[in-house]
Amino acid sequence: MRKQCVFGPIFSRRLGSSLGVNLVPYKTCNLDCVYCECGKTLNLTLERKEYLPSDLVIATLKEAAWRLRDNPPQCVTFAGWGEPTLHVHLGDIAEAAKRIFPQERLVLITNGTLFARYRNLLEEIQVFDLVIPSLDAGCETTFQVVNRPHLSLSFAEHLESLHLLRQHFTKDIWLEVFVVPGVNDTPKELQELKKHIQKLSPERIHINSLDRRPTCEWVKAPSQKELQKVARFLGGEVIPSLQKTRNPGLSLRRQYDPHESRSTPQ
Image 1 (cartoon, rainbow, N blue to C red):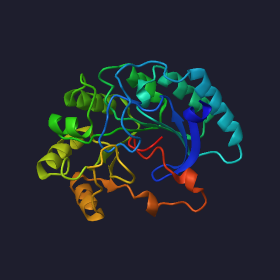
Image 2: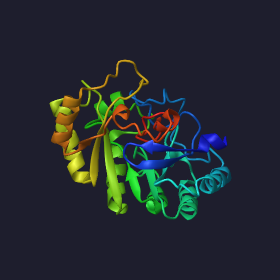
Image 3: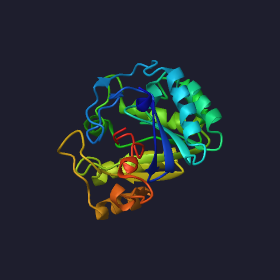
């Protein structure tokens, strides 16, 4: 279980050397995204509870700090096998992580859907230095096709959560858009996405795409030309593929990137 809750550090395309923190069992999430490279969601839930023992996570973070004392990571990233905000003690664990790694950047990668439903999350995340939420759709229909949410979760609630995040979190927000060709990259869909993104006004917009096997085999990777076109339209930047960002100083195992997005295997 210790290996399940803290992993790495690995080389992150966006964050550099990053120590990962996982707070939920495989595969616990409130979405079942068609592109997810972790695989199909096994526990589709909106319930916040103590999925992995908080004391164990904190103890494992302390062990990692001792192990890495001569070569600390650049950041500590909460990502993992599902949605980290589902853990009811996210805030307490994040506060402990900041005490254990006071010099490192504390990062939260989240699908960004739960802030409207659980307003206390807006307080819990204040310890983070950077939040990376997602927006893959411009309307309810596309949200259902691409993200396949829990039955009681709507696109309107997702948007409300992102707006609340923007209002209450004054540090950096990097918004991720995962491109699913033929679904969320049509002119109409991109126009709606652009409207939402302009209202959210994130510090950076990351355009992501398939790098490994997705949950649904029909999902394909767009070409770099297509990605660049989407990025220009949305005012964002394309995340380079793992193949283009291999760090020769790290083993292949450590380069297998578990926190480039919540779509990636944890």
